Length: 300
Ligand code: NAD
Image (cartoon, rainbow, N blue to C red; front, side, top):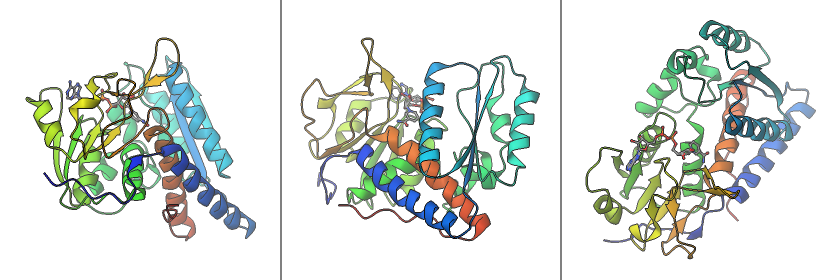
């Protein structure tokens, strides 16, 4: 097996890449507003008291404010009805100062997620999770891409990883990560396999893969030894450790990873997810206001 070509191997530092993107974005926003333009507006809706969701929303709203965005942070009671959440999304989606609107998932079990996501206008769907955006992705048309897979593509690109013709394996098939990830890799001309909880012979697929995106949501379920030495390993998992801190889906056993390139947890995919939400919001703003999307910062 010939290993995938990588211009910049080693640790894929999502935190550092995020800083580069967010600095470039803050400059663009500042230039826009200094010239008299309206700042981009992001609205985030959260339902209930899930502590992890509260942390994620805080990260997003803080980053958006730091980039110069106007932020509406709406928190609804855990017992909010479907109609109440729909009403909140409808109101925010109709506001002229809101360019990007997102619903933090998961929502409490009595709510119907799919129907709520459909209440977000497609042109403001900066999480890229609605049916319209999923369809655009499915046919390979440019639009607002789901943030976690988009962040992973930005990391792969920043490291000069040649995806055309590469054997890529996506482990997980969720609406948020696995499915759109597979589509984006396909769009970049990789040969894509999607594995999931019912897949047989996972170790064989992993051993054959040149690029592996692990999004099974199971702490440390793959040992670092599972991968081919020349592989690129993206660990999407985020799990709190009992004593504090975070672990991913991959357990490197305390050793330096013996693969060609890899993402750390924390500091890999997580910051890029937040960054792509801002990049998408700027893109949605640009469509209304007439400016181009942000170009990827040049890798140092
Ligand atoms: P999910 O639970 O919706 O989906 C998990 C997927 O993994 C399913 O499709 C399932 O079929 C598959 N799976 C489960 N066990 C498997 C196994 N043994 N072998 C193969 N496939 C298996 O989870 P999700 O929303 O896709 O998230 C996955 C992980 O990524 C979670 O840990 C989540 O916290 C994390 N996440 C991180 C970010 C980030 O920004 N870093 C963003 C979203 C999700």
